[in-house]
Image 1 (cartoon, helix red, strand yellow):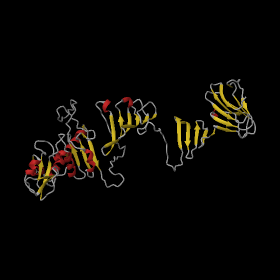
Image 2 (cartoon, helix red, strand yellow; image 1 turned 120 degrees about the vertical axis):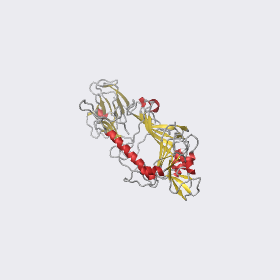
Image 3 (cartoon, helix red, strand yellow; image 1 turned 135 degrees about the vertical axis):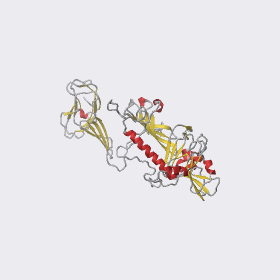
Length: 492
């Protein structure tokens, strides 16, 4: 219950004449009073019920009757020696005398020979034909079974306690209880929960401050939704993990760990220990390598914000692909995009600045490829590796001169269907431009540079020409005025 906000912790009337305010009764204080009263009512109702009485609003002495009816005993050892009448209810203050914990309400049942489990069912030292039964609790603890938390091995006692508890029950394991959780799933009943605060970490053979919760849901669900936990809400349901490390350099991590039979297999979480390398990470664990970084995504707190790496730590590259742990030194490093064999849709790669695509590649199931430039010009590649479209010019009806634009750079030109001579007019020279020409019909093929440009060793505007079938000419721009050429056959 919240205390009233006043220096003397008492209510005070105001004084209108002096302007002194009275005590403000807040909603928070009223709610605390209401919660306190409700809690006391519930405690009283539970006490009356445990005493075997029926609660009635018309009676005002039921708590007194319940207290008188509930005999108080200081330990389970004393309970064993207590001679009770059938259905008598007693309250045990603690499991061991003068040691807190493990107490509860017990009810005697005559003619009961149920096996003792040291926590739920207690045998009597004075009668062989009866048993004490601990009354149902919302939470059971290892103290309720007399398990001592002094780091000695009590593994079997913990599992015996779980066997004794019913479905839908919860067992809290106290700090310092030495037990092995690796076989827990085979013992848990449907909807049974274990809250493990022992701190025992068998996988690492150490003790630590941690709380681990084991929960088993219903097994009889077939192959769908077995052992499932679900968060439901009408607006943004969320699982919130908040790490608040005393030392960010060593404790700035939070993660979700996936295990198989108590052995870690994958870990997903954030790493803020190194601020510059702040990242969301996905790690793999196994016999080959214990702790392999599969993927990292840079977070805003670090210098690699938004960068993504695979099989490697973060780098300055927007996307970085490292070698997988399974890839041996002599193995090929393979990056593959794959679709089911019966699919007919294409693969598409797009490179863009903002919303404007500067290059598109389309890959088809028949092995062909289409590439589109920023201006919309198309380049085709057959399944045999042949170029067509804007990278090939086939002369069917020669026109002289035939001007070439920058769209044709890298192209191959032939006159194999020509019936007359053909002159090609090169565009203004730029470094890196390339054109290749082939004489495949007995007609003149002439290649002329733009005004002011020249081939090395020739004058400005002087062309190169050939009528010899089989002759080849490749020209490459070396600056904004000069063309380098390589030729076979006869050119003049």
